[in-house]
Image (cartoon, rainbow, N blue to C red; front, side, top):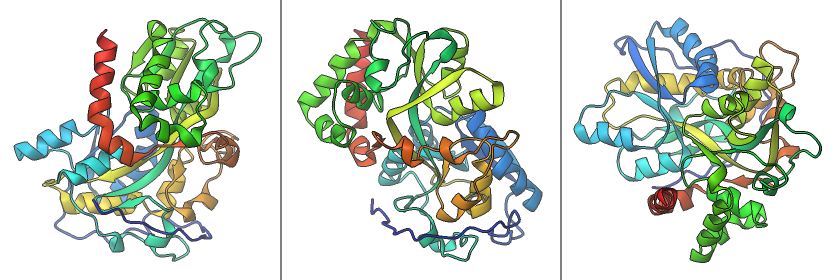
Length: 367
């Protein structure tokens, strides 16, 4: 896959009405669209910022479906010639793999709307967020969090603390899979964030990561869907858990939960829209993609969940949480103070090694 390398320029945002950056909706488009995402607080943020305004603008009915990631379902639909999903929110490494395997439609970036200040889309999207088959909407991250009401004395501050079940005895929540867990294990074992992938690229580094995971394996509660970690904390099933940062923020801001995010060693990533090859409502899906990745919808989403917009022009429009006096800027994964020991997900590494490492992870899990 040929990656589209883009240089982002500084854009001065200006508030615009919903839909101003969306192309006029043409007659003859499908009147129903199946939009697939991750559920929970994240999908709710998309419904408020993307779905409802798009429905109001176009009259298209949106059917929202949830999934747990990966490309298996997209691949099955495309290979069967029965594509029922129109547009899907995916992680970057999955977008790269699916595009390489011919499972996605290509996207003409010149059709994307300009920024609020007129900056062309190719300059307005932050560097590395536009790809041949995918357009990013958010920057998100996997952190770990704990329930402040359950910890007395010293609070955990580092990834090494997450793995320290002697000082902080109790169950740990981890997403069921190799990705991110191997990075976390190496960071906890003393590997600087900047060196994680060079270490993980060696057989010795992989062995080291699994050896570190061995130290907490007996205390792990595995999760698969993004809504599970906040629930595991709330129910007292785990003392600490990895989680998507936005899910924990929403549990705190929206539900008053006594949870604390630890940013040390977090692994940040992108989510992107893709259109499965042969999608029945491709043209309507493209209109939805263009609308939802405009300046204003991306900024509006950030008022519902603490994920950073993929456009530069959206950043100045990010303000308070939608129903509380909470500044959203410091809650973003990209806030400077949250990036001191962070890892950017290496999508090329995972696109090349996901199958092999997940096979080893599953074998390890079964032992």
